Amino acid sequence: MSETTPAEAPAPRRNASAEQDWTRVLSIQRPHPNLLKLYVLMALASTVAFPIVFVPLYFRYHTLRYRFDDEGVRASWGILFRREVLLTYRRIQDIHVSRNIVERWLGIGRVEIQTASGGSSSELALEGMSDHEAVRDYLYTRMRGARGEPAATAPRAGDGGAVPAGGEDEAVALLREIRAELEGARRALEAREREA
Image (cartoon, rainbow, N blue to C red):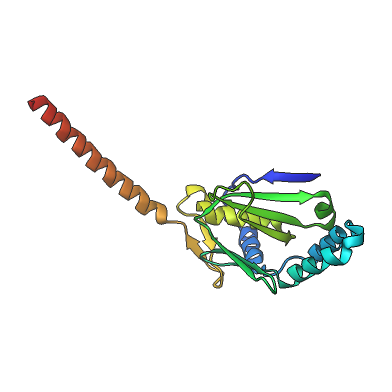
């Protein structure tokens, strides 16, 4: 049984608790220790194959690292076959929080990040997140620019300060320029048709 909650974009939050949530999210570098307990339970479910299943999961847990920065979210794991994934906030298309019954019991969740790569599975799954909802909200805020409010802010990794989501003013001005040029071109075409 798995509970998958499609994440809806949160309303922009500007209070002190939101700043504190973002600080907690930016400080996440390792999964919660309960992820190792989940891996042990998964390996125990395989009965006879316990050592074969548990050893890779054990090394995955001990090498799993996360990093949230200005560019995007990074994850890396592995000893023999090292894997590193960087997803920029611009590439993120959808975010889901997924928790099965054991994960709910352990108080952790998995944040699944999807891109427009065409696959049905997630591009990156942040496993062992105890603050899975705060991580989801942070990613949505960075991905969507706090739903288009020009005064909305999102903290930067490292300085703890706020960055205005103000790139939209430039985009609106550019779109107005394009509209004006298209209207001028349309008028010129209509004038030519009348003359002909």
